[in-house]
Image 1: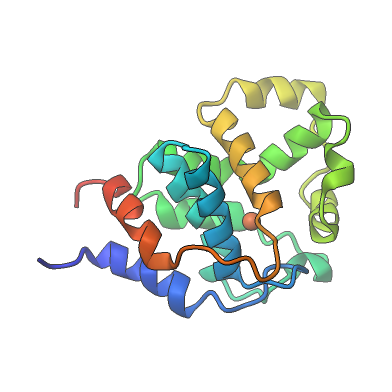
Image 2: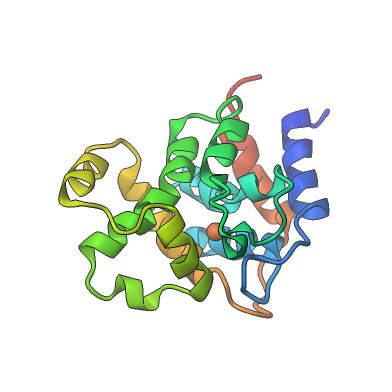
Length: 185
Ligand code: FE
């Protein structure tokens, strides 16, 4: 059986390129991705959302802006890069939550009173670069988008997936989900 080269590329990004620090948290990009995917799996989420959780920050791994561009006042637009990278290989059930996961933070800051106070330091820093909390009109427009509910769910996993020294299943464990969500080659 030959392995799909797209699957190999994703495995390579997550295993070889993901040793960089995740923002200001004391974990690597790989640990962050695995923790997010594991949260989705444990909650029994649909496979595309598990895959979206695993790959939501792949935009950080395909750029060269360093580990925490927000600290330097740069919005790296990693959700756009991730979306562009993934959109040739996956359908909207995977790519839309990835594309919208930063907007989902702006959404939650506008719609949940205590959400902002729960944000990590680097999320607060990047929030202002990303446009701050949504206006009521932006909230309504976001609600109407396909995949926005999944993006909000992904956002919650994203915030929780910053636990130092938390053991998770390895990258290999999640690759079958990725394989099943790939579009026919
Ligand atoms: Fe993240």
